[in-house]
Image (cartoon, rainbow, N blue to C red):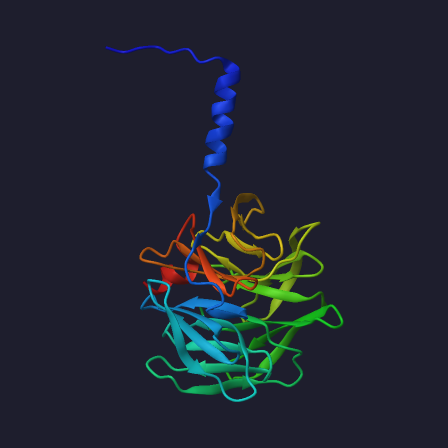
Amino acid sequence: MSFLIKIPFGLLSLCFIISCKAQNIKSNHFTTEFSFTKGIEGPAVNAKGELFAVNFKEEGTIGIVDSNGIGSVYVHLPEGSIGNGIRFDQNDNMFIADYKGHNVLYVENGTKEVTIWAHNNDMSQPNDLAIAPNGTIYLSDPNWAESTGKVWMVNKSKEIVLLAQNLGTVNGIEVSPDGKKLYINESIQRNIWEYNINDDGTISNKEKFLSFTDFGMDGMRCDAEGNLYITRYDKGKVIIVSPAKKILKEVQLKGKKPSNITFGGPDGKTCYVTMADRGCFETFQALNPGAYYKKIH
């Protein structure tokens, strides 16, 4: 037996609005507040599914966090070094942007020995890094005092080479899953720029991807479909944007200062967000697995 129930149009519209609101994504707590310092940054997940970030308990450390959200010190960086971004390559080696020492640091897979991979004193402070599918490393380099920035590349000879200058305060940086696009954002100017990546790793054809009239940006990462997950610093949100520049979702966070984001979890669809104002991680479920996660699993 079946029944036909008539719902007034006004009530139907209200139900639709409530349904849409129910689809909004909200974050969950993962680690305890201030288990990391306010300098928590550079979240990255290796092939084993282990989660890392800089500045656990104190500056100059790399912390590791287990599946229950319990953290500990993984390594201490050399004296005078403080990490910011972290990335793993296809062989699960760790690379760290050392903003104080003007280095890219290296920890070989299976060891805890920290060495200098590349160094360049001409950088203001290497902030975040991205690794292309072919292994090329890209670095964002903001000069906060002058509200300017540069983009660098680490070549095969481990030289840090200047690619772009006279930018705003470049911060978040990411390579598209196919390795053809480089995205950078400017925190103070609130712009996101898109470059083509040439065969030799250099970049060209700078185009504006997106801009905002309010709040800054920090880290950003791509999922396997090329959607950008952008942390909106001071707004307390992560915004998800398609390669066609369409805003797909906004994620409401518990804190206000998300500094960076990465993907992990059993299926690569758990986003881990570092929160500078809370010294901890928050999590939410992504639309797709992370681009890097998909390549190494």
